[in-house]
Length: 113
Length: 118
Image 1: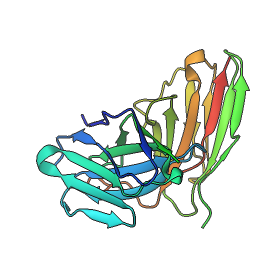
Image 2: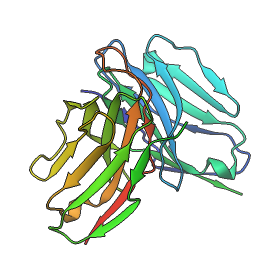
Image 3: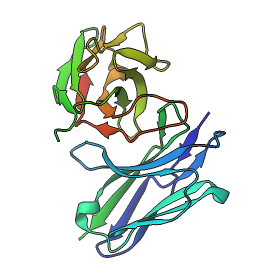
């Protein structure tokens, strides 16, 4: 069985602060994929990133960065210099193959102007 | 490229009534998924299609839920009869490639249908 834990239910930050969203996963598969999705108030899940288990390089995309550590089974997401438009619910997800994806419960981020 | 389309966007029904949702995936995408997202929770997979065949429906309450993808393109999800606990957002997603044991493709989501059962 696979499991994704996002312990932070809600986070509030003031605009321009940095914020890190935590994601811890469990799987018995040796090959697996990790995802982050953003769900703004409009409701549509927006794909942010996909990583496979063999690629532990950290990734940076603009103000977004991801830290993947197999040793701690974590795939954390950092937003640098947060903006009001970053306010949303963020989901971490895991798939061990067969395209069956398990989502975490989400972290609601509120960026206060 | 057009995204995943869903309709209706909102639906309010009374318990024991029937309801149907429609999804049109991204053109050329082989795999289609239906998820249920209850308020405050992450999406839960209900059913996964590969072209017009079912790959996984282990979490679909088959006594009341049904889904089909007859021509391998559009899909409909039906609830009959609805219960109060079915109130949720129903998300449709698609991914481009065929299903394999070791590969997972990125799923692209539609805007969802918000169902309220009174």
